Amino acid sequence: MSAATTTDERIARLSTASLRRVIEPDIDLPGQIGAGQVLPDQLLSIHGLDLDLTADQRALLSREELAAILDGGFRFEAVLMAGFCFELAVKDDLSDPRVAYALHEVGEETRHSRLFARVIGQVGPKAINPLRGGGRIGRWLEYRLNFTLVRRPALLDTLILAGEEIPDLMQKLASEDPATDPFVVEVNRYHRQEEARHLAFARLQVAERWAGATWSDRFAVRHIAPYAVRELFHSLVHPGVYGVVDLPMWKTWLAVRRLPERRALLRQAARPVLKALVDGKVFGRGGVSIGWRYLCGVDRQGDPMEGRRTGD
Image 1 (cartoon, rainbow, N blue to C red):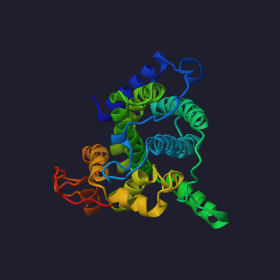
Image 2 (image 1 turned 45 degrees about the horizontal axis):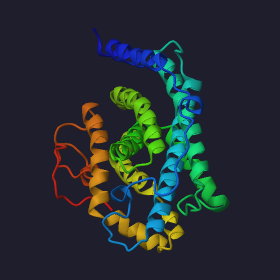
Image 3 (image 1 turned 180 degrees about the vertical axis):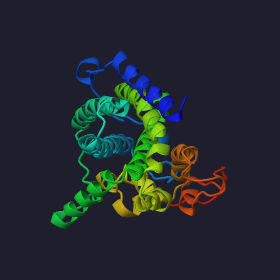
Image 4 (image 1 turned 30 degrees about the vertical axis):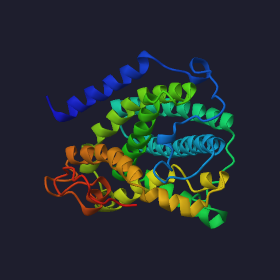
């Protein structure tokens, strides 16, 4: 049996799994986020800074951070869906099992996005994200960046892996903590259940994407992607959330980036992405690029080097 046939069968099984239980969040998750603090102190981005915040400030910060993460997830999934739809528009063989599963994934992502938007509306965040391009030039740059990304399949697949591994880890930690808001736990469990299939699909495609990648796409995966993943992680909780609780926005955000706790969380989320790349033959044994080594705290072979300094 060829590798392609095996991959086709695995992807077809993912489609079957998506069919077995279609969860409609507007019907199956009709809950409401509670009042007060929705994430425990140890999962707030500032954990480790030893800031003297009141209980009300911590509660407000937890809500703003949750809304910021969901907002980032919504926008990332929109880019993911744009990438899938661009590929489908130019796909030659529409009977390919990858087409069927991509459509399943787009359908699931639209449901996730509707739920994220509902929860954001319940939170009612006040923070404005200063990292998003302001003005006509900023919006144009944001548009061009997203358009370039969806046209680079190997890079897109790498960032899809990162964009799913990072929130998956955050949601896992939140779901396991009894201090997390019960409805947030429900949302996280639902999202992680479907994202597990999306991650499996992305991992299955790494080797295929790499085999057909252009030299510039390969360069981007090896040398640009690790820095993009780092900024993706840090942008999920943007500087604006700190201003809402009367903390200096940029100073606090930069301090959070340097926290050992945040660096450890980033390494933990990024290492599965690197493993998928190594398994997909993007890097040979001993050939992990310096950017990925720096991001994940690993050596040239991809093995962990605990205590190694990673990017802030």
